[in-house]
Structures are given as C-alpha cells and as structure tokens.
Length: 232
Image (tube, rainbow, N blue to C red):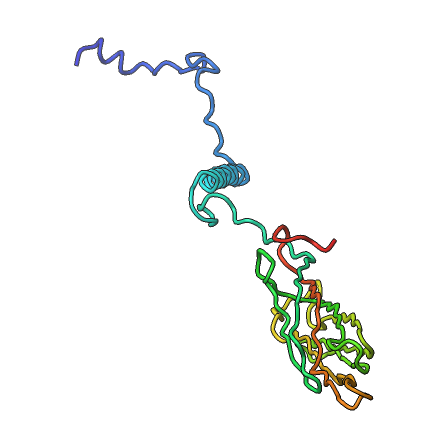
C-alpha cells in the first residue's frame, strides 16, 4: 500500500452536520385517523346508502303498474264510508179473508241501485176500507215484525182505518253492521167483517168476505256513500 493511501486511511472521517439536510423538506408522517373518525365516516356511508334505497323504492312504487302492492302502482282506494240511506215501495194487498191472517215479507232492493244491508228501521203506513159498503163495522189489525222478534201492531174498527207502524232494529247501529234483510214481515189480520142485511125486512144477509188494504213501506239502512240517496 502506498504512503498516500495509508495517510488517507489514517485521517479521521469528516464530521456530519444537520446543515446538509434543510429543515422542512421532509415533513413528519400524518397520524392515522382516530376510532371516532372512522365510526363517523362509516355512519355517513350507511346513511347515504339508506337514502338511495328509499328513493329507489319510492320511484319504483310510483312508476310501476298493476295492483296496489308495494310495486303495484297506485295505492288501493280507501274503504267507502257507510252512511244512512233509505228506500221504499208501495204494496197493494189482496183481500184478507175474514178471520184470517196473511204475512207479507218486506222486500228490499226492489227500487235501489245497490244491494241493501244493515237495515236499522222499517216503517209501514197502512190503510183499509170496508169492501161492503153499508155493512156492520169491520176490524183490521196490522203488525210489523223484525228479525229480532220485536213487533208493533195497531187495530182499527169501522168502515175504514189506518195504521202507522215504526220498528227499529236492535242489532244494527252506526257502529255495528249486519245483513238483517231477512225476517222483516208485515202481518195483516181481518179480525171481523160485518155483514149487511138485505131483502124485505132485512131477512137476508149479505156476508162480507174480508177487506183489501194498501201499505207504503219505507226502510232505512247503512250503505256505501254515493250509491243511493241519503236520508240526511
């Protein structure tokens, strides 16, 4: 080894200073995000995802066609409101024989455009006239019977008479509905039909076979709003 090389190796290494590394060129690495920051970021992502799903569902439900399901287009219509309605008809009864009773079931749906249910009142305005003019007084009874077994009756005597019967159901109210159109009955009885004396000295008798009658039947019920005329 030459002397020059030996001298260089024996010399101490030059001292390194911080001036060779300018301050600020190499910033310290950033600290990792905290647990709270990571949780907040995750909640934000979840909230955004929920909003997107809700928007998609609403758009699909409003644009879809068909029935009333979630994706069936328009929502089903609200149930129709039940309101008081009425109806009625006239009855020209045949002759009721003397001493006999005849039943006439009350007819519903005869003049209405929709099916009648939930009947809460029936009225019967009845009248009769003696078929045999100049005879002894006659007697007629009119009775109205409900499906619950309730009844109301009126009797009149003479050459003519009237009966106004009103009967309410105990099973139907504005909060309780029931199909109770079966069992309403108008019952007509000719209790007595007086005869008329004819011929010389009234020795001959013209018997009275019975009497005809007429009745105006009206009824009130709860039905779907808009179907028929309301009683209010």
